Image 1 (cartoon, helix red, strand yellow):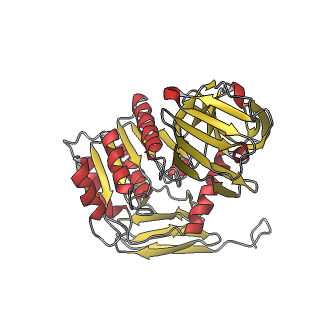
Image 2 (image 1 turned 90 degrees about the vertical axis):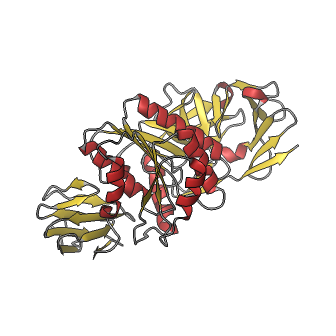
Image 3 (image 1 turned 180 degrees about the vertical axis):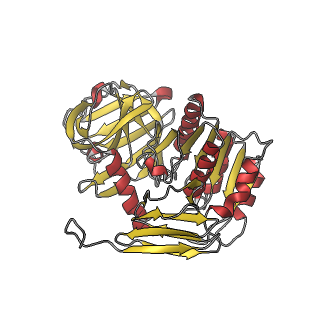
Length: 426
């Protein structure tokens, strides 16, 4: 038993030989007992514990004999490997990006799900900081991002090295409103470009843009278009899990920019359930408010899937409808009494109309802010007959725009469901 009366957690002492890599899967903590250990390009301070979150695998490396004390929590594990693991497999990438004559300012990271993109991004950011550069990161992964809640693109300037990008909170946000880019590729591309521009305008001289793992089917086309939008100096592309170069070759043919190949590490760690748990923890991280505020949608500007609806249409109030008008004749209709929770995009002869059942707003993840800037988040708990909504958040000060999403949260933020998006022609 520990001094607190709780059962003592399993503690292990690991002995590392030179050039070995210790892989620690959280939830766990590691404390270096001797100098020489590093993680993601950052040397460890002896006697200072490093915490590894649930489901995450962090590599610890050494160039000399080293010892580490490890505390394992439920489902945690560790092992020592000498194979294709750790950041040493990406030293050629570092040499390419940080060569003496290099002028790399913007890097895009591309690879399959769980290929190591976030780990490599963190490593490159830490190396850039060690060289005295002003460093920024854009997290494009709207489903498994580190900097922002699901459904958002996040950007931040790093001022000191980090072990986990989840310790960094986004300073710039792009609200997409979906946990997958499929069907909303244009919205994701727009928000990534805007966040990257704002980040570099704030002083970042070395920016890493970490992308999602959508590379199957139309995913490569999506990535190629995003790369074209972003004009990176270098695209770092992971090899296939089997060591092939399918993704690398396809992007090389279409992008016409400098490409660098990154090795795929020899371990894959996250199960589907672990990814779901991680996503729910991100909602809980950002939805901290406990107060309920009533927001009148008739008096608010609305953004939904990249479109801006600032004014009310003439049909508002008739037939149980709230109609908001956007540019180019686009309209958003929120209607009571519609059967089935589904978002429908109707392509009319001269414009586009988005139709949402009023009931679909219940539980919806919302961004709150002004014009195109999100400043906080909330979720809807009630829709009133006058189309005002009750929102759980921490404040509505300065809020004149409500950002709607396809994400609905249930059971006290322990479960999500996604509103289907259907496109139809007149």
